[in-house]
Amino acid sequence: MQALAKVLVVDDDAVVGQSFDRVLSKKGYSVSTAMNGQEALSQFAGGKHDVVFTDIKMPGMNGIEVAQRIKAKSPWTPVVVVTGYGTPDNEAAAAAVGVADFLRKPLLPSAIEEVMERITKKPIIEEKVSEIAEEAREITEDASKSMGVGRTLKNIGLFFAAPFIGLAYFIAFPFIGLGMLVWYGIQALTGRSGSER
Image (cartoon, rainbow, N blue to C red; front, side, top):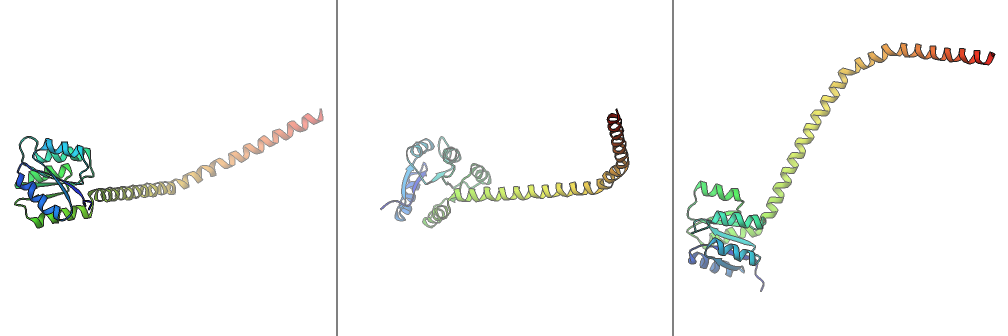
């Protein structure tokens, strides 16, 4: 039977990796584990992983850096931060990297299943595409509102300019008409005098 998804669990505590393996393997997921950030990046580069769970506090490279590097290589791969240190600073740093979710220790099988189900039900790439589409729609609406304001201002300007344009034609028209009469008169006279010779 083919696995539903390939999961990479990064934690320096082997018991955590075993917990994920026990819970997710029963649900049909393929689970691999890494004990530190460097090992995780090597495994991630070597095989296609659909989801990554990473602890924040690890020796060497921390989980936020692991998440950042994985998201840089594969922005569509959901990364979940597993932490016993759920401080606002940690959560803000992880959110800035683009993690999909947080899972707090102590780990309960139901919590692992719930997060996994939530992530695999609606892939993060779809979320991002819908967010980008929404932003594009808002920008388009703003631009059309701006264009509508510009068009309105142009029409108001033309409304106030129209009398002056009409006045200019009214003043210039007699001179143009008179000039044309003189020109035709000269043409007629020069044409007649040319034919009399």
